[in-house]
Image (cartoon, rainbow, N blue to C red; front, top):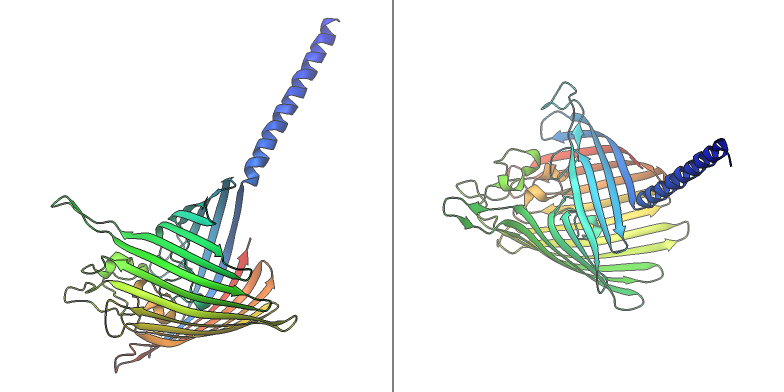
Length: 381
């Protein structure tokens, strides 16, 4: 074998080795890419607000989400999500924001960062900054706005008790504000939300019945300013019509009981589905103006969904800063309705038209009107 032949074979072997190394890296990268999924959505909103005697105000708003899901193994997942906006109850970013004009860079920050780990007995441990781990009948937002991402730990369980029945228990322990007395070097009880929810679900051929009961205790809110809640971007003194004492603080905690019943009926192929829900919440830490209630009916057929929800929230029934920020602008002492029409253009995009017709300060003789309309174009990817 002459030198040129040896040299040619050596180059060929090296080239083949490089190809195999590249294939190995490609396979490893493919395995890694299979363990990481990403998704997102974009929303463009036209919003109209009519409040009391004020002239109608129109606003255009954007919302964007980007979510990464990692699957290190079959028993665990890690989620990371970024969302526009800065408020705890909204990801909206107003176009031409009057508080930040001139088309500057807009906020896009951490919304979710949490893990899920499978436990024995079909239980799941969740930790970090997570989506709300509780289910509310009719998807109501009386207690917690759907955009809130609690920070702490949760456990979700799912027991199959019969061929058609399930029993679920959801637990949550969340931090609202860490407290420490630097003067006396004492670790104080943090402001917290502790939740315990039970669900009983029966599935038949054409019916799904859901019975729901939950306890949601806001700990150490007493003697704290409403500023502790973050106030969804509002001023620190805004109590959202909750009662405050002479110092502007919460005079009590909030110990809320929530119960509901929900029925979903499949009317038959080509006819659609109908959904009924009734829910009620009571704050046991006060004796008056402490109730909230919802009644929901919705109909879905193909690409169309039509829903109507009647809502009443008394002054101290819930923590106003955490309730639905769209209904009565996120203030308690309110009643009214939500009418929504959803049309799916295709599996990835849809139009949603929602109208909120509310009365505020319902316990006062000085009742006020608040009407809000959203027209949304949403694209998921």
